[in-house]
Length: 210
Image 1 (cartoon, rainbow, N blue to C red):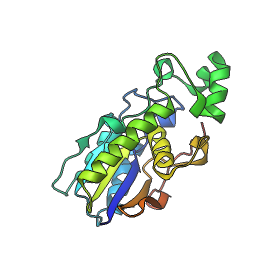
Image 2 (tube, rainbow, N blue to C red):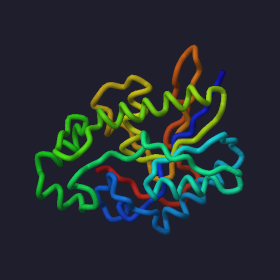
Image 3 (cartoon, one colour):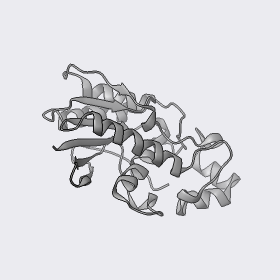
Image 4 (cartoon, rainbow, N blue to C red):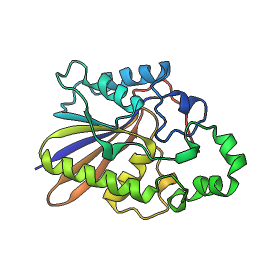
């Protein structure tokens, strides 16, 4: 009983282009992001999705809506795939955060799994809720194919969680905007990553290393 999961990062938004911390700040797709979503939809047009789940944030939701066009389905909001909450950092330039919080920013750049900030979510908590949501949906839709549209700071801990990759894992995985990865699941073997960070459909994207 094979279940196929497409794990998709949303298209580009202002926060990506301008080097801002995103978190739960609800950036919509920018023009480049809308183009990326269209390229992604064209790339996956022949893939059968029984459902498409999405983070409720606009940049993910709009990407999911583009994927749903001509499929006769609508995105399903899933809070388990919402982005990490970064508290007071959200919407702020990364350069500004580096100046104001040098110790915490250095930890973000090196081992964000250890980062603890008042009013912010830890990657451990993100991983727990994302893995739980994926496990529930996989059980409910065993033998089907579905997509999950979410965020960089969810994709990384989610993949590490289902594959048993120990910390520090965050900066060892680099999913680009509007990229997709493929995960397969069977009862006998559990989850297996069969493709990671496919970007061949993208004519343009910006690389983010912070």
